[in-house]
Image 1: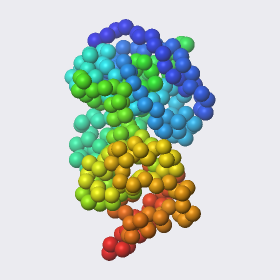
Image 2: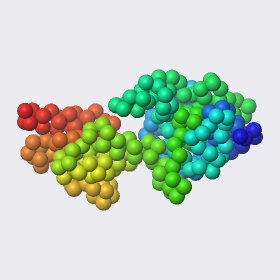
Image 3: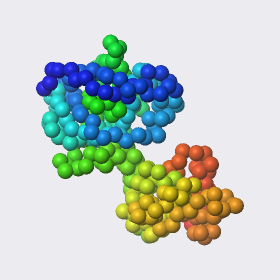
Length: 290
């Protein structure tokens, strides 16, 4: 156990829709069932941008964002048994307490401790471990990876292999698990199927990997940025198309390419237009499969 306060740099959001400010913050030691982690690498997710713009409700300012990180355990609080100082870890923006009805249900992983059910702006005891300029700073999803050191409950951390490259596996904290899990766990893509993926950013490419792992025979990547096509093909996309290369709606192009629509389509952009394309393809395919 550690009793010392650590001073370090962190990116603080003081107000809605204002730039992040790099500040020196104080990070208190972990209390019972808490872990203090030295963050080695963190990704930047679209959700971080949304929350900075005030698009996500129930966020208290000022706070330290970030939820896609990897690091090394610096110290642990009383009662922590899942990790020890020196362990490489990934903070979990979706905690897993392992005890609630949702954690014990094999069909869901949405722990009752998630932000959907209770605020994660403070630690479970309703206090913060961050201070800056004499003011308490709120947490984000309990993990706040935009700080060089951070504290989280032991239900929001996973130990990983000692040889894992932290600058790469940090993406498991959100982006990769979101995309790969969408293909493997949510859609349950079947071998020999045809898939369409709208958006080839980090999450979209993770969907490509998931579809390939599941045995899909045709994986069509769609994006308006052709620079993404090479990486998409390396990861398993069989074809890549740019909607701007066609005069007709992209769903019509895809229907002509496949003759019947696709078995699975993934919208990984967040625009209503691409959502309409996705559902048009799925409905057409289901209609002609009846």
